[in-house]
Length: 306
Image: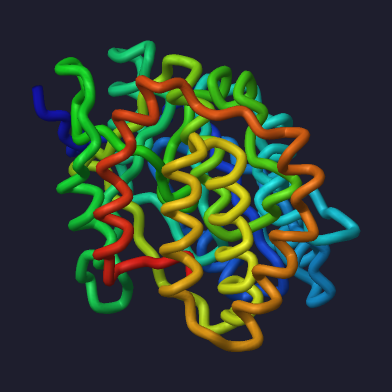
């Protein structure tokens, strides 16, 4: 059955929100302002990843109702783990400092998770601001090739976009949350595989909306370096030997041949002792379900880790 955002929304105690931010005070204040205005009135935890621009103090001053966890270093995606640990709500919606949930979507997502106890993650539709157009990745989410059980309320996914997703808190914590090794950049893929391997499901739901006003303040070189490294690490950690070799070869021939890629490969190779010790291939049933994603990732023009 379709799930739609209710036109009238009341305060909802089922969902908390975790925002991670780093050196983007103005963007963070804007996103938090939109979130505190939501009719659901969710508890909000802002994890400041070691900012030196006064983000934590500015949030505390302007939004005293928001909990601020100010870290001394940039913990990357692990900041979300820490934020989840400060909440007691059964569901947690993630935001980056340049994304925010549309009114009613938190309640709609919580309703879906209530109705489907084996569903661990819901990925919302992403609308790019100020144009109001869909993010190009939405088409790939909507047309996901991953097969799923009939009871799923939307297309089954093999991964998700953390800044536009709601998670079941217990499932997230039982799977270990985001890896401290991967830090940031495609970190969702490893967690998604571990959730699916544990019997949970992930899906896309069209009626949920997250807005994204991409910040111009970003280190694109660092993100590409870490994204390629993390893709390699995930491949070596969870894929069986033959698919891992095929994926590694594809990355070798498709990644730009420049200093950033070379450093990413060096980072990945230096991590091999850890990867070998931590390697645990996903179950054959999960590998078979997610194998169609290889072709989708090769053809994707919307989002590439490299």
